[in-house]
View 1: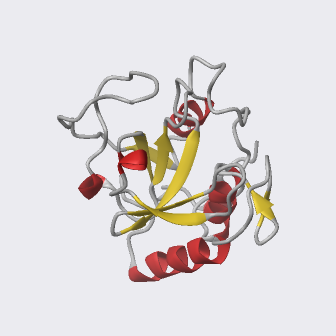
View 2 (view 1 turned 90 degrees about the horizontal axis):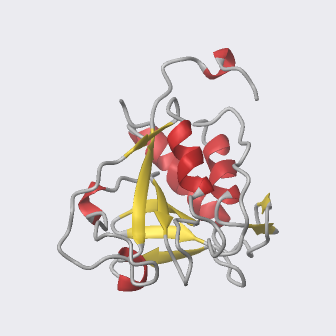
View 3 (view 1 turned 60 degrees about the vertical axis):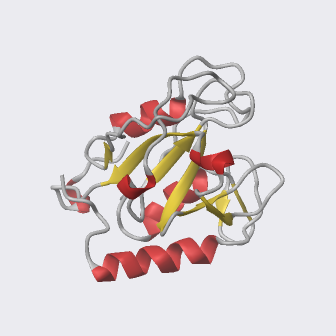
Length: 183
């Protein structure tokens, strides 16, 4: 599958879109640039704005840190969007598993991530991947957490690197967006 962000023009549009969300405050279940957004909604809105998705209907999810779930609605939803996202097979690393949930060791190596990738994290004391970030390139991810605006974070920071559990790459859809059925 061909990555969606595969031309200088698409990469430039991605960088502009990602930067335009920086500083947007966190707000549950929202995606209003400069007003408020949560970690899933703003990425979906951004992917619509750059032309990757024709529309965005997010998965049903709780913004509770995955405390009460056994499966990740975020990862399940991304995996089911096969015409839009491809899961990146992550090389096993020798570092330990998730410090919170005890998941098997398998943090992705950063060299496998490409600009535009959707990164799924297991943060806090949750048991599942419930937090999303949007990879910017050069080891940087943009994300937002409750009480914080959308910020750029280095994945060199072990807080995020060790908790990165899944990566989904936006792929070029083989059909024109106008041919895709709406939900």
